[in-house]
Length: 357
Ligand code: NAD
Ligand code: TYD
Image 1 (tube, rainbow, N blue to C red):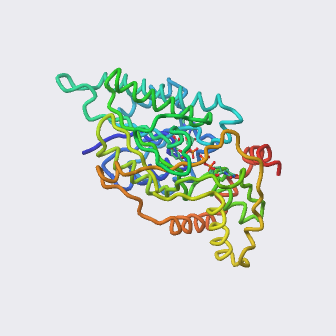
Image 2 (cartoon, rainbow, N blue to C red):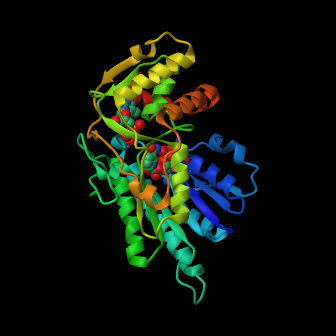
Image 3 (cartoon, helix red, strand yellow):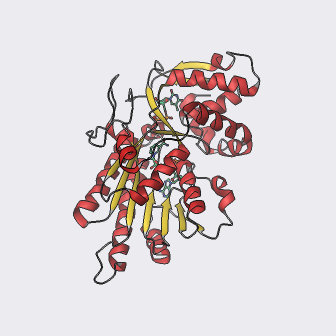
């Protein structure tokens, strides 16, 4: 069936993989990438798709309701996959309001545009919202922090601690409220930490890969014993495709890698792999590890129970962490120009404020 889908945040890290998967897997679909191109959005991530007949890029801000109106009435989408967001916890600590604007108000603007458009275009006699779907992409960070044991399930109570996770939690609640109040067809996914190509080098894995390449310090926050559950980004994109097409209306699906790592163990593995790939002596990159002041409100442990999406929709991760990490390091080593572009200008200002280097 032909569909027109707006993917917001398609020039960012995860969005670029979702856009590529949809454009290549569904030649009959028309994919509109709606992105404001903030510091985190980069069209270099999608160069290979520029000539694809079923791909359209529209630079637009989800805070601008006029731009949304124009895009919805021009393209008449059947579906929205919403990834556009401010996504970095440390930045949310520095400027929480940016997160309220884009993640909360921007999401409500998008919900309003979908609601208005889909009500207008629903066929007479047909059910309201026929064949439409709003897929909201969210994070496991809305659930707060775990102790040494246990997992986040879809029923875990929300308990966000950072301004980032608080803004994502608010956006999740708004999405559910548009289903419960107006009947908007929605699905939600809450995913664990992603890693892979196109990841902006401010998050742990790409920052540390960049720093190892440039032999700069690796700033490990606090005692380094914080735990994250890592998922290769292309597996997340496949999970989004699965839930968008086959998930049940109004349901939430947790997505995770079944792959918990303490930060310090992950950093040591990364250093070992990079020493081998860069032809450096064993243990050389580990010397760069520097323990620094902890992040305020730092969540101790995240771990996802992804059994619902596995049992109901058959999704599971396809690569092991060692494979995914190795592919990721190779990508950064082969894409020096990309790294150079994204780490010039504004990036350095942020980096110096954050790490004083
Ligand atoms: P990212 O920061 O790499 O990309 C965000 C994209 O959104 C960028 O292309 C940016 O230009 C665009 N954007 C930002 N503000 C916008 C605005 N006002 N209007 C239009 N576009 C705007 O983020 P990411 O890591 O790819 O995350 C994508 C989504 O997935 C986010 O909603 C995030 O909360 C969620 N998520 C991320 C992770 C992760 O590990 N990165 C895990 C789970 C969920
Ligand atoms: P990050 O990649 O920012 O993702 P999130 O905070 O959304 O989980 O951080 C992952 C973990 O790594 C988190 O426990 C914080 C830690 N961390 C460091 O120790 N040093 C760093 O420079 C960064 C960016 C993160």
